[in-house]
Amino acid sequence: MVERGRQAFAPCSTCHAVSPGEMSGLGPNLHGVYGRQAGSEEGFAYSPELASSGIVWRKGALDDFIASPSRTVQGTSMIYAGEPDPAVREAIIAYLQSLQ
Image 1 (cartoon, helix red, strand yellow):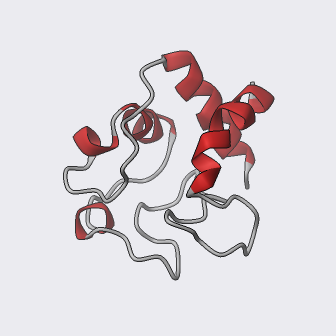
Image 2: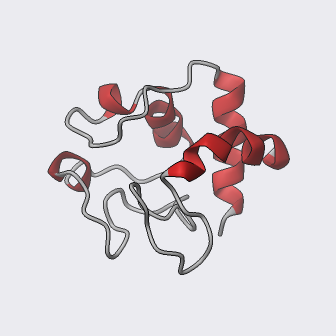
């Protein structure tokens, strides 16, 4: 599942770093994102809406956000349209959870 998620995440790596200490790109570094408060990665300028969302990145919140970022957090600066396939989202979430 994690390997499938890593492969499904490949397009996301255009904007998101995943290695510890790696600089954020257009999106924040997602290493350690699972269980982290949304909008809390040091050194990244989040939209005010995401920063004040109160979301904690666990399975349900990640699933909702990956399915439709703009529906989950209106005003997010993430331009990704969303992943409609629940199995792909589940694999991506498993991959993100492995990045601890």
